[in-house]
Length: 23
Image (cartoon, rainbow, N blue to C red; front, top):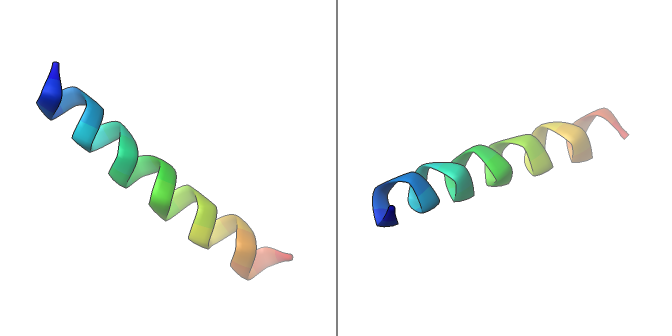
């Protein structure tokens, strides 16, 4: 579960950066 949470955090971080770059 820890690994899944870590992967989710990485995905969320990348998505946040990507979204921020678009705006």
